[in-house]
Image 1 (cartoon, rainbow, N blue to C red):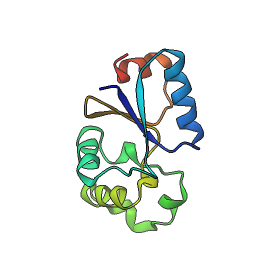
Image 2 (cartoon, helix red, strand yellow):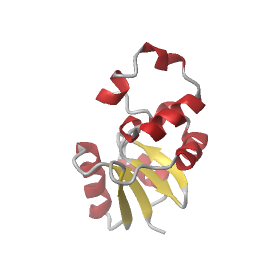
Image 3 (cartoon, helix red, strand yellow):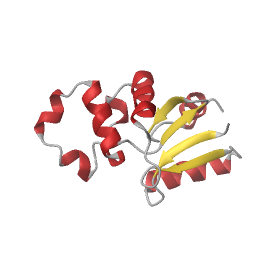
Image 4 (cartoon, rainbow, N blue to C red):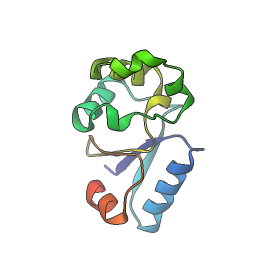
Length: 118
């Protein structure tokens, strides 16, 4: 199974990540989270692996609209929120062999290569 990349097509960071993968000849499957939102069970496994905090998209409108109560949420509350609104997930989110390996795309190439197992 190729590397799975969860995101939205018009996201600048997703475009940059996909171009980076293509320039290295890496096979991947892009999953548009607006058209195919991840299930709560999938999100739970991602949170189990990476934690809820690293996969939060804190720069989006969805996050800002949650209000101050979100600061005290448990991982379970975050899983439910991510399942309700995939825009709360940091993009892109990389899944390899069913396991979330990286959220976001801000790291030196060496770190990206290591995290993505390339």
